[in-house]
Length: 381
Image 1 (cartoon, rainbow, N blue to C red):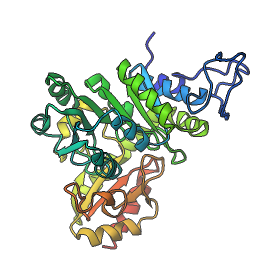
Image 2 (cartoon, rainbow, N blue to C red):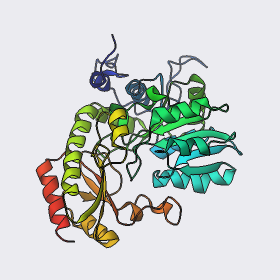
Image 3 (cartoon, rainbow, N blue to C red):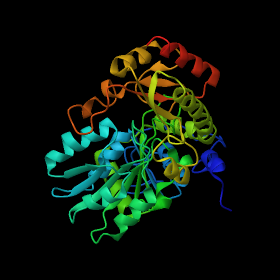
């Protein structure tokens, strides 16, 4: 009988230990496995190639994304790097023009020098995506919602455009901000889903990891070969921590979204705030797409202040409950100024971020404390 999402996060891929009956997946802290004879083993040879704790995580994440195949990596960027290694010199990539700074750095500073070409377009406009696809296009790369401007692209519409092209590029979606609880890109026509499991999937700011999910058996085989050959895999402890975090994903994402919407509403009424960006706030330009495609608006809010960059720095440095730090998706609330932190790699490029933009990762604390903290921080500008 098919299981609901809230059941899958607790049970998918996670069976009681056959030796002891332990209900939690053990941390198989081992590098190698004894073989009864040469070339014979019990499914595992060496932990770069496969580890039971990592396998449980991979199976769980595949179930959550509604697909057959999952691969776990040492970071979200390791997962992204592995997808790009499917390409070869002369291939072309269409990417969103509002991607994570680390993604742009990898595309622009690494893969471009190997003869792979990139065009950056506004993927919220399906016509721009369609116009950018060439005969040499092998990959269309989406983030939705994007980091840090929280733009929302219509995955199904873009998937239909991609599928209609004779060269049929792959469509990959970075689903980190939304998580499989809020949207499932494979069900909307994507070929690959990428996650930084460091963020909402882990949810506790204590593990670094990444993942690739797909229903395409050929792509999975190629990616699994690269996963083993390159070796950018998570250790069993990080795999265990992400599995632990995933169990509360629906509970956390609902609370993140509840708090984030309240924060967005508060900021939109504050006279010092110029613009608020939140996918489920009615002022968002892609509100209708977000409502159609996502379960809720997630936990990320961005905003700009009428005082510009100087005011943004003051607010980011005055908060007390919101900690000034990079990353996102943990139970604690974080604040940052992307232009000077997570997105410095886009400076002096067409993807440069407004120096006055503030990004919030709204946690699961009591909303009264979060709003009071923003009130006192804004009071100082």
